[in-house]
Length: 62
Length: 308
Picture: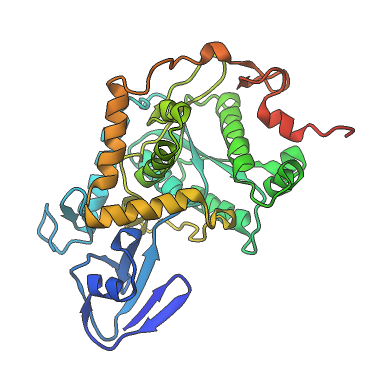
């Protein structure tokens, strides 16, 4: 699966849960949303080969 | 994880509420919660005209969309600050706001261009006045003045901003760390109008996490500007947000209890001594807006250039 976050990209071969992906990338779940193939998904969902995964940062302001 | 309402797969989970919902039920819940907050804090009535301060970002556009969906008379105000930051930031954010208005026939967008109106962009006036490249304080001053000015000249009853719970909790955290008693007294979901010219200000999203408003915006496919203001990098409030996010991760609901507990404590009398500041205010000799300073207000002093 291909994962994008801000202007970075990763490729993962193995199936994993959303929460495991965020942990692997050292991203706090509180700071992002995860979109799989255009659909918002919860942390327990599985991400598989061929999925396009977009991690959306939610923190704004200054 | 399944939707609490219909048992379909959940799209969004709120650990602070122990509540997971599918997309349709989340949208319904989000609008109901907004309506409850409007009612709980007596922000405004359906008869009143609301001016929504929009930045092109997720929170303000979501707020505008929800108020329209709930049937309120809500128009938008976009203030073009003239910030480029290498990404044409103001032009991009204005385009997002204009696109939203164009897609919603009931929505009217008022645009104020600071450079066209006053002769300088916000970064330019900040450099001239403060001799640095970080215009956040000047920017806040200009936005507050212009929001108040337009609310009065265009006859709006109330000014609504998209501040969410994370914004409020970060400000509260900073004010507590430094025991800013004056700021603590003035932080609230509703800042009442004062007869001398300050518009009522309300924050209908003050009980939503930033993540909640982002989820709503995504599910409703509202197109917003993802880029942050280039001047916000390294801001203290972002560091406070990060600290609070770490605490929330370990103990869901921490941010909610921190902010809501503060608001409740204020309603019960904490931090409310000497609340009435109206006697300290008088009209600016140039623009007429209330100020505690003698003569010109801080906004008008920004543009007063000796010898020009």
